[in-house]
Image (cartoon, rainbow, N blue to C red; front, side, top):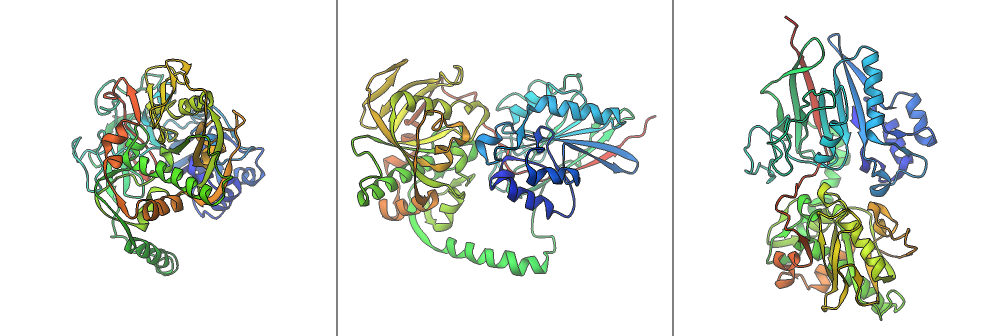
Length: 499
């Protein structure tokens, strides 16, 4: 069973329909998405390839599996205009009730939301859930490594496998995770990028309630012990690997600093890697303007803006050689450089308000910036968090609720954001954009090789400099830093016979 997530829609519903129709086994699940008006997907519902829930029969025992997809789908992907996106809780509860009415008393909730605390909040509003498999971010849960130790991939566990308690950043302690009916719910997940296979072994009683989580549960490292398919190896893996090897062999720069690209960092604070990419967008726009003076309004200061969700090398890139492959790892999507001209300070504040509106959920809309600094209060209501905005030359644009310098700026960003994705209000503000035909990966490559002459370092790319660009008030000591991206989990069940 596969629960639909936001990246399944990245290339639109037609491509998703092709993928699903060519899948030979399994069902794609989402209780809260409505495909009735999307012709490319509605036929797959009738064919049983796409459903709100499904039932698996194992040794005479029935297990109901209900899927849920983030309601932010239209902001962070491309589902089109015809896919209906409904609230998660009501849709999931309706499926649970229907399954239980049909005699299924063991219910597994599988989700692709955007943060563990969002899943926990959802589970607290549901009745009848026995196990939760959560996705959309990718925290490492394991019984084998005590936090804060790091595993073989350099990841830090945030709690034990089959998490049963949650308390923000200290996810392995605190109040029990229970549903609306008061039943405890074990939560499982594991790190993405096909690094782990999650296994959950539990005992159920005659009423379908989990009575025991066996110590055989936990993440398994995916290695090369499985025999490969010769045809796929020859026609897909080998050619792809040859290209990857060529990119990795092309050394384009050296860095004197570690570049922090961890998901938990770029979605909650400015990092030096984020500064590098935001600088690259800004530099590339300036280079294009030098060749064609219409690209920018030269009277306006230029701001660089990159969303943290578009930065995907979920690790710290160690000081030393930087290769071309690294630029694709950092900026892997088909996002193109875009310029938005003549943005007022009021509009800029609205844009930055969106950037920090979901920082507590470790959301991909968090901005990495260049050309400005700003301060915000994460304890204030979303939409009213930005306290102060300055240009890099020290000119104060906004402070304590007032526009100080009534000027306009140009913004170098990516078309994904300029189109309004990740909640960015460019279209709502009536701000158009010019797409400049260069991907953000190419802009990063060009900036490193030409703008920096292959040398990354100095004060500008220290983390101390990055920390001064976006200032949180109060300091983020208690901020939960989590994420769930890819998810590969297998759930096995053992039923304890009633005495």
